[in-house]
Length: 420
Image 1 (spheres, one colour):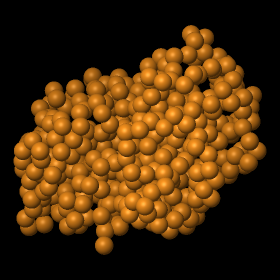
Image 2 (cartoon, rainbow, N blue to C red; image 1 turned 30 degrees about the horizontal axis):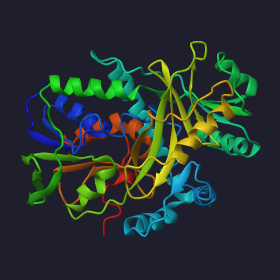
Image 3 (tube, rainbow, N blue to C red; image 1 turned 120 degrees about the vertical axis):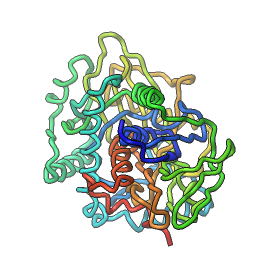
């Protein structure tokens, strides 16, 4: 460890918070992590576990609005905006509509790709560190389709990916089937993004926490930030329900709760929680999957992990709640045999997990130093790329606080960009 640079308070113990703590403690900071819930209760545990340079298109993209309106007529659809007069949702929706265009996608595709590729390389390094074995597998992800319409769309996207120098292969039905000899596929074809990978999120999170605790990082669970004190364009103290935490620097992550934290700084970071569901399935011994996959028409993620398969999906935008909407999960379950006809998955009554993806209205992360507070960095809003971007968030946070040259362009991810 390096010479102590002072105390940094990290707010949020999801992947962005833990990765920030990891790089900061290695950089010589004394680190305190504040988590409003418990360390095992956030969306970094139950997600699809995918590392996705392939996701260079932001959520706010052409066609998603029309498709979303169509999907809203079906309670089992992959994308749903729960009707509400909530001012935050209305404000978010208006901003989303403004950014859902080709110019926005083209402007940011390269920087999103670069950030994901940077994060993927950092995952490779982390997996080689002592004490880390989180089932990292960089063999690629299959984007599987059944219809001619989606085939056309996906091949067009694959051409764009090739223009961005991503390693991909367009496969017909037989070529895709050859990659999965133990399970029949009922598909028209697939695109293999060789640049993508996967991991097992619970192992990653537990191993990061163990490393941080072994290196004197202090964790405070059930600790909710109530307000901040400031002076001279710096935050001085985070005041919580468990006492006050002064710091020389502050890192605000917070996942879907990021807007409520930045509001205490009189800064607007519009963001809506996108509820997603997942469950683990134990296949028969002879039904092993080799590749993670996205079932494109159904928007369902399929990830082999920990000797099982995790199925995850749906994007339900609206105010957070603790309800499990059965039809949302049924939509996932009913899509599985359409692509894997030999898998007979029942509704997993007692195995359903849900979490909230932090979705910005332009589909871009919030990453960088705040203009109003020079000792404070925001790292959040990763949406469906949150786990994928975790190490990049953490390394960039540490580089910003050390005033080092950044290895990835984050100019488009300015955390103040919506602040009036």
